[in-house]
Structures are given as C-alpha cells and as structure tokens.
Image (cartoon, rainbow, N blue to C red):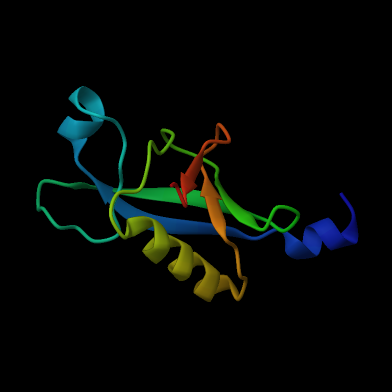
Length: 102
C-alpha cells in the first residue's frame, strides 16, 4: 500500500435500522437512517471510502438490497459530512450500486 492509499483510507461505522421480518421474509435488506418503528433492529454497518471511484462501499454485514425513499441521499450526506469528502455513490459489498438508483 502506498502512502497515498494509506492517507485516503477512510472507514466509517454508521448506525442504521431495519425491519427483521422484511429482511428475512420480504423484499430484502433495506435499512433506514431513523428508527421509524420500535420493532426495527439496530445495526452497525461499515463503509469504506474509495477515492478512485468517488464512492462509499459497504464492508460488512448482510448486503444492503437498497435504500428506500430519501435514505440514500441522507446516508450519503451524513458519511460525506463526517469525513469531509464529496462521494456521489454508495455500493454494497458485492458491487451493486444502492445509491443513486434511477
């Protein structure tokens, strides 16, 4: 690893919430920023900053299926602001773009 790679390696742990029933028996793993429902489970998901592609990449846990509503832009803004970067995309650990989607 070069000095440049070492300097730009940023990992952030973000707390999200998800519906366990929907994850196991429904459409998939769609975490949200705020715990809208008290039955939602809390989870810490780590993301790696990729300066080459200007994106965040999920590092652990079950792959995120998607980010509904405004959760994608909110998550992107939170991670960018905390780390003073300007990423434009989020990918899960299998390289599926989860934000933005069109």
